[in-house]
Image 1 (tube, rainbow, N blue to C red):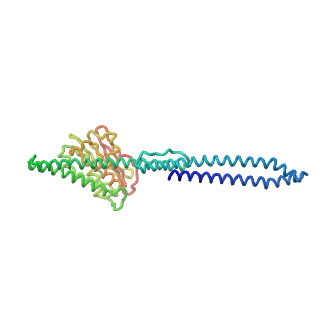
Image 2 (cartoon, helix red, strand yellow):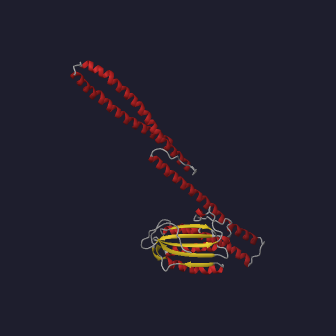
Image 3 (spheres, rainbow, N blue to C red):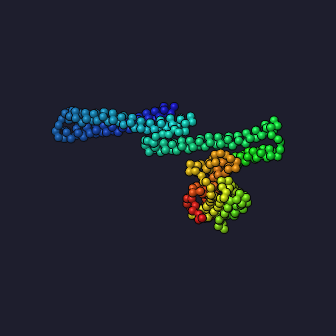
Length: 371
């Protein structure tokens, strides 16, 4: 179907080009043979030549040359029209075939960028769309695989414990019930994370109010401080007196809480976690840094994806469901901000920025906070 449409378009373009060329040649030919002939006859008659001889002379010379020129022009116009039609129809045909491949699930399909400027712009847009679709398909596959793995492990453990209890293989004591409780809690945490993520708005900024980010962060860090102390980690907070932004206070608290929980989970003892905030270039920057093994460079572009975990062993003690940072990104974006991460030299820094009040404009670069 697409090939036929592309062919029909090529024929229409060729026909239009030929029609334009023939019209132009016809006008020139008529002007030459009618108006030119009359002018030639008038000049020759005024010079004393007979009209019949002058007409025959005109037909033998000018008329013949015009006929030859018209024939050549027709052939050239047809050839050029066909060439032009092919140049336009070929990339459109390739675009149609690539679209069919993507519709059939081949997201690696791309089209060559060639032809007129409008066609190349369309090809560029199509290729960008194909890249985005391929990335979304990769995320979907990883999401399904990771979600299945996250659900399978606790369910398998629960099934094993329950079968052992049913067959009197293990005693129904407090330790057994504690293990069952831990697996059930793991499922509950996963369900809560899955329930929270879709509710994190990604584009809307409705309902945002003026919030003192410094006050929200101080309240959140006060609640988190005992966990760091209990884990034997050094926890430091460096904030100015006030950082005014437009945000949702509960959402902002959740962002900071998720970053602190992530730092707590991946900082080895003895270690150090530091939270810093500042206002710079019309933005409020909050950064949470922690010591530890860091994040491999290959994993850095994916840490904000749903269910992505740097720790592939899925040990309960070393990671959750891999949704915390995805929620952070969605919430920060809903506030009109940006997030980022870098890691190296035994240190990992996760940061986010929000437009400050009143200007709300500034650089989108990573904050350069003083240590």
